[in-house]
Length: 181
Image (cartoon, rainbow, N blue to C red):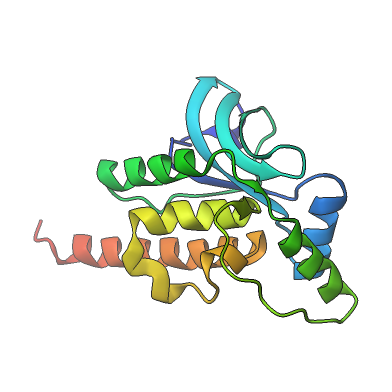
């Protein structure tokens, strides 16, 4: 088992560079190492997971993932929060792919800023799905997101979730240091 697969649990958010033209467009247009993300749902075996993720072929679907992530974020703190992420992720399955957001990213590469589109939960890219799932579990985090869930890109989501994780770790460390031994 690879080290990147160790300790992943349902409700975690995975990231990688993405594949094909959409992965390249997202990475290039957003100047990020991350072009794709997903929600882990169920471990199938040591190196295989069932995930929910959005892609140009099929929109938001359940997928069997055997490719390792290059980053994993765990934002849930309780079983209730984990279940809320999984429930919201499941609710969004079947949404069509958010090509409008991909075009917005493509035009950004050309130096043209298109206006933001209106929220349409029936059309998502991967990061829109993951952000909606996280915020369904922890709505109090919304002010920490610079962008609305329907306009956040994978790289920005990775940065935001990393900041939240870092803060959670510092708070936990402080709480432990205050406990008398």
